Amino acid sequence: MDTFRNNEVQLPISPHQSVWVRRWASLKGHVFRRNLTWFLMALPALLWLLIFKYLPLIGVWIGFTDYKVRRGVFGSDFVGLDNFRFLFATDTAVRATVNTVVLNLLFISVGVIFAMLVAWLLFEVYTSQLTKYYQTLLLLPRFISWVVVSYFVYALLATENGVINAILRSLGLQPVSWYNSPEYWRIILLLVSLWSGVGISSLIYLSGMLAIDPQLFEAAKIDGASKWQQFKYVTFPMVLPLVVINVLLAMAYIMNADFGLFFQVTRNQQLLYPVTDVLDTYIYRSLIVTKNISMAAAAQFYQSFVGFVLVILFNWIVRRIERPDEPLSLF
Amino acid sequence: MSTHTERLREQKRQDTDRLMNWLSRFSVHFTLLCFGLFCLVPLLLIISASFTDEIALTRDGYRLIPSEFSTEAYDLIFRNPTVIVRAYAVTLLTTTVGTLIALTFMSMLAYVLSRPDFVLRKPLSFFVFFTMLFNGGVVPYYILMTQYLHVQDTFFALMLPYFVVAFYVLILRTYFAALPSELIDAARVDGAGELRIFVSIALPLAKPALATIGLFTALNYWNDWTTSLYFIRDPHLYPLQYLLYIIQSNSQAMQLQSAVGNITVGEVPTQTARMAMAVLATGPAALFFLFFQRYLIRGVTLGAFK
Image 1 (cartoon, one colour):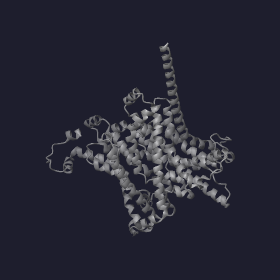
Image 2 (cartoon, one colour):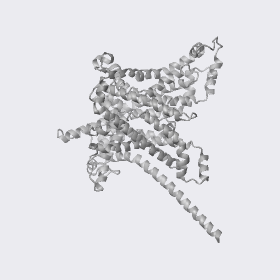
Image 3 (cartoon, one colour):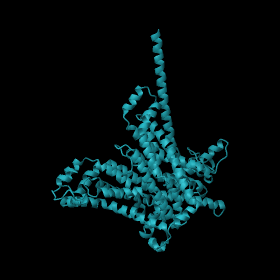
């Protein structure tokens, strides 16, 4: 800001003029050149965003047309809300919505409990040499692709030679044909999602705990607080804002399922759809498998639009509760 | 006498305290170890299966320690390595070139948005940020790529998706904004141009942040299979992860057909060979991860990964 003022030649600008007029007038000589260079530096990324993020937004229109590839986006017939009417007349879209929301809620709520637990345990032994290794192990899953995850889930659940059925047999129980039994899949997906996600979120909460003033713990110890009391009265209340905000931001994206988890880990088994078919897999199928592009676009618009409303809503809530000195909201 | 009993009692209390302390530390370590193993063991299962004899795997099932050790699966792959070598080449190329382009694009944009005297700072920041709020999703993107840009079955399609990630741009911007402005002012006084300042002052100072974002981007490329699912039909352009997926879904289809009795299973890669492929596809990424994990942990605490 200072350089801006120092370099600026005194310009005959009245303070009554708008900010933009004043800024434009100050764009002279080297200041102009500097801003131009900056703009050109930003340009490649801006163009990328324009083409691949903003241009597709026009494609939202497809959801309101009877899309024909040969006739293009604007050549296809406008059909109003017909696609949406048809979409919600089928059970599949409703089922996909319910599955998306229910499973995401399950992942978020159980995930936050385990992440907090692991973060607290790491915090209690943070000075130990071993903590480094725990962190490594906990982070590892996040960097394994969903395809590979589906490979080991298969090793665990294979009917004939899978690990779980071997354990069941050795306990004298009946083996289960997992990939044909939708009733178990909420739990299976929850476990896989915990496997993949708990490490990362626990490290976020751990960093929150490490930021707590150590004097608070000293004071609690002098007052004779046990480890559990220290957690209950110091650690937990201090990281609670961070937890609440993380949960709320996760809720904002509740309409978006992790495509890899639901597509790869379930091996896209049709028998499991009643529990595992989510909006993202439904959209994929409409677009690529059944090639009903209008329907896919309608479902996509529905997902994006509700998602947008939720992001705005939950961000507003976060803004209401965050502390002004450490903003955590998206905007 | 009474002081002696008191001392004894005190001693005993301290011993119990120490014991309780030790017990609680032990249980904390034990629980953490369990969580750690929960993360690790599934991966060991794949490695173990890849080193098991095919017949033994079918007979004895998946185990943590191979019931019959064999390198047959790897021999099988390396006897005819064209497919996996090609997939490796595709993945390596998209990962390196893609990450380099992504880092260039994102760091330039983030640096510019971090300059307080850039006139378009606010509107352009919003332009970047808005993409995080409203996501058009895969359908319009698919139509754009296939009907208008016609980039299906090209390297370009594989590299495109991670060039600019709004969230990473915002993280980099925060990092650039925190750099000491004196350095930049001094360079300006010495007559350095803006591009020069960016390349020889801002970039070297931002190395830790660049390493973090670069690592995330590289892992995004390495683990990407969705892009190929939508845009790649040419087997010559299959990246590693997509190849793994294709092998898995083919063998699934074959199993189905052989169960119906149409064909005999001959061409399908054996179970162990599939597991060996998974090991070969994940190995480098895992090593990479171990090597750079301090950047990852820093990235997580920056909130870089959620």
